[in-house]
Amino acid sequence: MRQVNYIKIVAAPVQLAFDKIADFKSFESHCQAVISVEVKEISQNESESTWLVHFHDGKMSWTEKDVFDEQNLTIDFTQTAGDADIFEGRWTIEAVNESESKVSFDARFCMGIPTLADILEPIAESAIKQNVEQMLSELFTESDKAVA
Image (cartoon, helix red, strand yellow):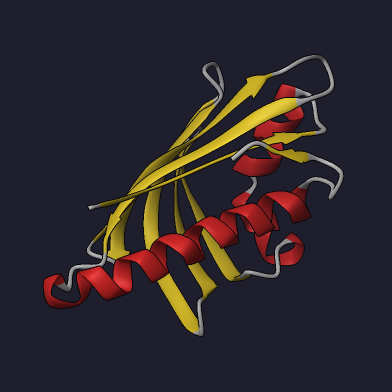
């Protein structure tokens, strides 16, 4: 099981940062890494989203259950079907000050091919981190500060 962690300070108040990240459908028009996102609302704070993204030299797709906690400014996701065996994690948004927020992306994944794990999973980890970095840079501004 691999971990991916990425933190970025973005130039947006905390509620705006949460709202931008929670709007998964907008990722396909704002993020080059995202080919398409289909979102089906389950309830006020839950959705099912199906993603197709550029992944290293190919594409990766999955469907996930998303749980939005606006009070705690978190979004939890758990893959229910897709290319990886396991893909789950959390977005966390915290106020730095009135005009900046810290966005954390933490995920765990397993590609499900034990004999190739030592080769595939480091590539997948790098691709996921690059995609998250690119998505956040494109959702917010290039002048934001990367922390990790």
